Image (cartoon, rainbow, N blue to C red; front, side, top):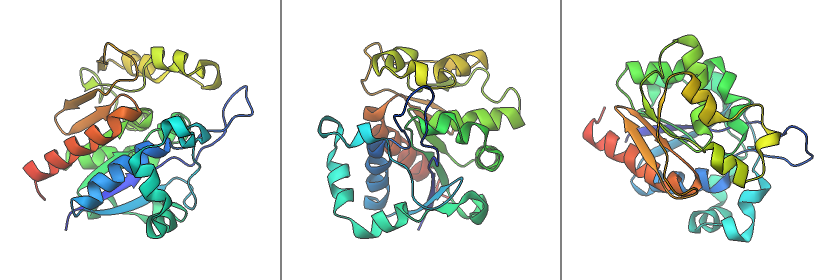
Length: 230
């Protein structure tokens, strides 16, 4: 059985507001159930371990997905989600793929986490796929810091500056991820219409633009695993 390591954010505070963030729930649940329904073993980890903060906006009625409802009735997965391993407790070599859900949290903690960044480099150098969705690609910044030039010329997408503006959160984050990726030389692409699904794949690196891209990114990761089984 192939194994997928899902690394989630531990960060929940935002700037200039009392609102909180964390993982965007559907960006975890949509891919998670794509993986387990295909028979993959999924391990959950985070910088601090333990319970993952959830962006409250992702639990509003208009943002709830079928996978959210499934998660609500899945005691075993909730137990895993509330008791994630720390990054120090997991060994990348034991897994076949790496996945980063979004929510705004990653732009703070995963963007600067040395362990996570090192894992990304280890996976790519070992010809194992790495996927991330929405703000999950912020984790690539930590890998870029350790290997300058990693992102130059790579086809990448993420939650766009336009989408940040439409979400009214541009003033609550330390930087715009699209801008940062472009500054590092990434070949950035996005859907012409905001908040529509968009996936980019550059070799073993797979990225998705927004919440609607979470399931498609997971499917692209599964396809990559099936083409190159360990």
